[in-house]
Image (cartoon, rainbow, N blue to C red; front, side, top):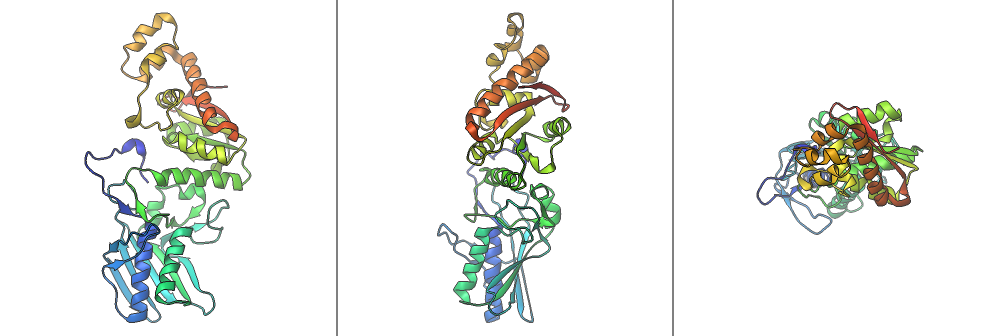
Length: 353
């Protein structure tokens, strides 16, 4: 996934792409057909959960005694996905009779080590829907057959460092993801899903306090202040709404939201998506929080941080309280909310109390 603050949709119709789960399923089908029939289907067509039937060109194929493998280059369309262009490979081998379909993590695919995820600790990080899709391919081509499916992603360990996987306890590589098989550009569904999985892991580990931070600087400030376990910190990005709505249904005792002054000002206005392209700071509203003699200068300011320079800590505290109230309304009884406001250097300049 990419940082939503660093990317913006191109000014043209957006092209959809395919998830790693869809690519792994297509590679599985091609490999299994080669194992059964001696020939690779290229392009290879699969059926997605929604009934769509995309075709995928093979970028890799190989065969050996009792196995065959095929590879698909992942095309994420116009989505800024870190796995765009990665080679997803599925090797299908003859399995142990009576065991059905088993799944294994090849190079570049991670292994789950913490509870709270849809896959149990010790299992390869291949999510339930991709598993179902690949098992469905086996059932269609070789009903009742026993096969081992090993999924690999070229350079996956390095790519995983740019994702939530290390924090979620998925070690060694990427997750094979997807519920529909389709990547919708700039929906940021993967980012929001990662927030949800982070909450699941924190709850499964018995944590009662989680922190949603808008970026690295605000997270460092929260870490220095709170000293919570690694699993408590959620890379919320701009998606405060996605965080709060999930906590409303999956509660914890306490939520701390940490973010820069401008983003917390937007949260205080009631915005649920804090991206710069989806809402602006109400400068007049900020000015109204200042003493009368500073309001006119604040209304003429070009940026929220310029207003912060005028109002200092009292203004930052006021914004923190407004942000807290807005987030609390979204969370409901799902958590007790407090807010930390940081400046551009990562120092805490305001808090809701």
